[in-house]
Length: 112
Image (tube, rainbow, N blue to C red; front, side, top):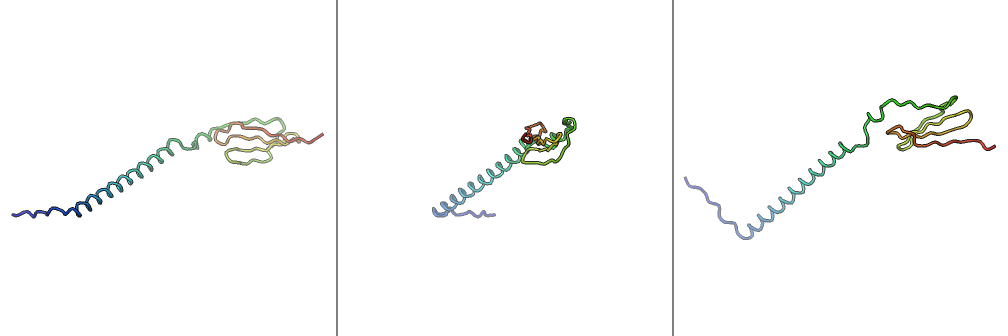
């Protein structure tokens, strides 16, 4: 049997082959970089996510002053707002929505 021998490429063909190899290397490296970036983003979101549902699901009891009545509740950003009526005085208490720790208190009173 005889083997067919490929002729040597011309200098123009060799330059074209080198250019194609270089472009394929660039495309391969770009694809690999994109895959790495996606994996890093997914890993970051898994390990550094914004809290979890179990953190806020713990049972917490907030004590109110005697005679206080909850008038309204609401959410503003990452705060939980509770409006209270304490003997004719309106008070808004804010809590961190993730940890449910008290964040502030605002009282409204009538001028004398």
